[in-house]
Length: 352
Image: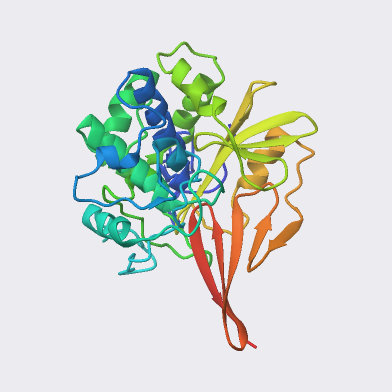
């Protein structure tokens, strides 16, 4: 393990394998594993419509007679947008804090899908949150408790959580924004927990990867295999989507990975199924590059972060990376661009 830096500016304690970080969208891999485990237990089916697990008065949008299923949510092919249109930020530094299950239900009941279900990949925090909410409703417990009972306890992971206890608070690194100033942590309710609620440390995430690589016997082995066996295309060269995991194929080798970003943290976990090597990279500072290139380089030293950009209408996609730029236009032309990466939207106004 390589560690560099401190828990905070002015804090003499160095980061180590027990230092706590927000892991952001890496949470989605845990949500998809919950889904696969619940399939193994016979509690749900991948093809179950998500509406089955929501209150009866919630009208989940349909298109051409097709309903959004759990597998559609896990593969980001549900047709739902990245974020709900009724997400009103109280603070951009804590964007999901006030978004409730009732808000999500209201959005679903009024939204009209703009593309076919199951046909096109578009990364969706909304979909990840909805999947976590549906699984929690089915299991009869909140998302954090479901992760603890179904994943953390069986794997012996003691530092992956949605709520920090006193010891974890002591081990918590302080997140820093892109100007290297301390920034707020992100809060989630039931509507978005499955998209990005979890905290963890490097030791726990390495345990998680070791289990995925088969180095430890676990009752989750079959469920972990299921998360990789289901795959759909993304429309990006060399990139498929499994159940939350992204799978990059280069020169016949596969890299299985997910990354995450919050206001003050960046995270990457990934593994090479052939060499059976796994990598965890965590940072308590937000940067555009994040720690993705570090993680990918350890898995494949020939990997280059300088990928080509391809255009499609008013969108630009970065090949082999789950990033998308959308241009907002008016009669005078583009007025704003929105970069979505790691499930986060970053707006930039045109200056001239």
